[in-house]
Image 1 (cartoon, rainbow, N blue to C red):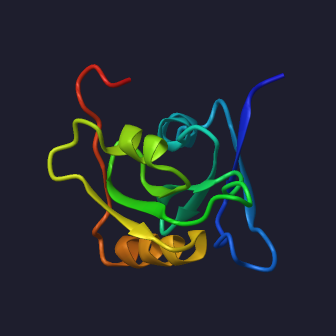
Image 2: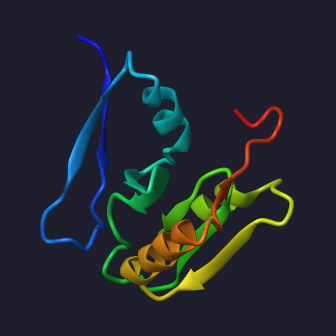
Length: 126
C-alpha cells in the first residue's frame, strides 16, 4: 500500500479541519515530508507548509511555545528543544516565544500572507 500524508488546510483552531491527502507518487509528497517536524501535524496555508504540535504540553507545563518563521522547519513548537532543531545552523533564523499555539499559528499565517516565512535547508542537514 503506498504511503500518504494528511495535510490540514484549516487553522488548528477551526471548528472543522480541511484535510487533503497527498499520495506518495504525488509531486507534493517530498515537499510535505521535508516540511514536517517530529511530533507535529502538518498544515498548509497559501501553499506554505507549517507545523503545529500533535499535542500540547503536559498540564503541569505552560507557555512558552515557540513560533519559527525562518528555519529548517516552519511552525509553532511546544518546547525549546524542537525549536532549536528548527533553527540550529540557520543564519538569521527568526523565532519568538508565544503564550499559546493559537497565537503562534496566527503569527505564522500572518507571516505567510506577508511573504515573511522561509524554509532554509543547509548542506548536510538532511
